[in-house]
Amino acid sequence: MTQLKIGDKAPLFTGTDQDGKSISLSDFRGRKVILYFYPKDNTPGCTAEACSLRDGRAELQRMGFEVIGVSPDSVKSHQGFIAKHGLTFPLIADADKSIAAAYGVWGEKKFMGRTYMGILRTTFVIGPDGTIEKIFDKVNTKDHFTQIVEAYQ
Figure 1 (cartoon, rainbow, N blue to C red):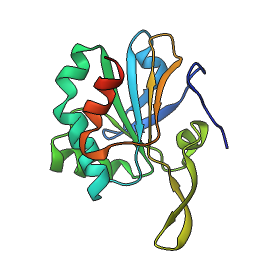
Figure 2: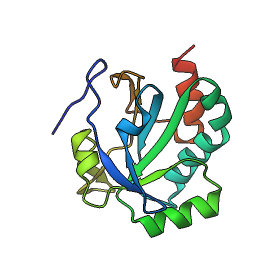
Figure 3: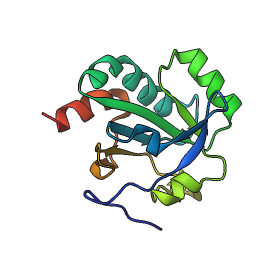
Figure 4: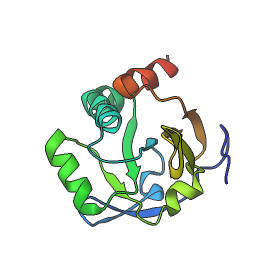
């Protein structure tokens, strides 16, 4: 599995957003990107994380950040998640997990004594030049927005 670190070039990708449109990391060249990987739409932790980023989006934009979410959910699932929670940023449907694999966040998880493969909740902050500036692998789902802002103070 890929183990990215701060200073590495972020892997380029192209995926499909909630509207069925193609979205690529290269579309955001010259801008700072918060690329966050989460396990599943409409689950408690993932909803809290998405809503935290939604609520802080104006401040994040003021700081120069764009937000992109990625999960293995379908385009249709993303549409419902966005509508239900008023999300204001794109969500990429990574059904084949290729983007997650490129970022090293598709891996073995353990829950209630069961081992399975899934998304390892991780956020990458990518600088305007395409390099990884920060990695959050211990995400505060309830206040992820503040966690990111504080890392830049």
